[in-house]
Image 1 (spheres, one colour):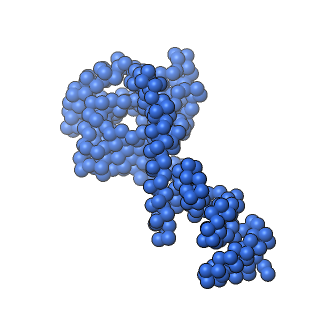
Image 2: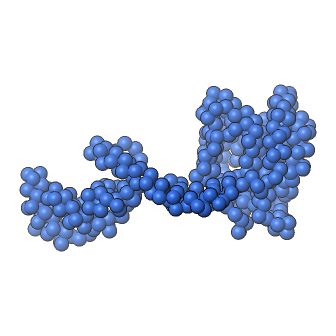
Image 3: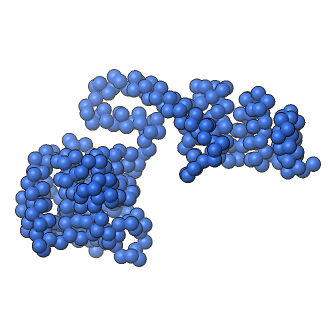
Length: 384
């Protein structure tokens, strides 16, 4: 009898609840066709129905050898481990959930997925408490920045967060520290910037009211450009900008309204790259607008945000960390790490944005970056 015929006969036996016969037929089919994933999955189910969880687990492992990421097989494996080896089942539930397909699941999966989520959450909670206890002494001795990094280390180990890397579209300078949000200690001018929030906001309001202010879409690429990350917002005024400095040039129609803001930027210091930097602008995000996940073009410089008008709920994600913008609370981040933003409110959100050198770069390295980018026709895409 062929393997297909044996499986069909086993299905009939299982439907009649003759699991012994179904098992014998499936074992014969597996011997005849050891590379058939469905045969091993059927055998696992029959073994479980016979009260043979260890044999069922062995059959699932044979199935997973053929299709290691199969959602149903991983769920079955986790449920069997829950019975046989409860201590190792938590991670197995997580591995199964990681392969959950998008969209609605068939009804027969509902109860087991609910169990998977409950048991995996309990396992993660216990494991997190264990990790926290293990690192408690080190955290107590660490400064604020160190505690944040240790907490992220735990989160990464628990796979609550994933690891993100700098992935610039154009220019990658090697050896620079990759951080989603950089520590304030590396930018002593942040306090002065924040203290000027009201003054900067007042100049923004004056600029916005000016008749000749140049408000343009933030994203402006040729429609034929080989880019997909900006498709929803290209030439879209849902995300607009009032540029003060753009690719190293002063935008006089706007800049003449913001003398105090520009004077502050001169004290901070920005990359000077002909045709590319400095850049500074007021970024306006319309109510309900979403900035899709994307990356910037040059990891040799970082980006600073100073929130000015922030309705409740407006958020900004860089890598695995999501923050709510708060008026007057500035931060510096690496825009070559995947990031996105959302204004879920019914009001306009405004942030002052400008670029700064990555603090790991020395003067000679900055000169090299500026020379190379300037040689590349200023790389217009490398602006904010």
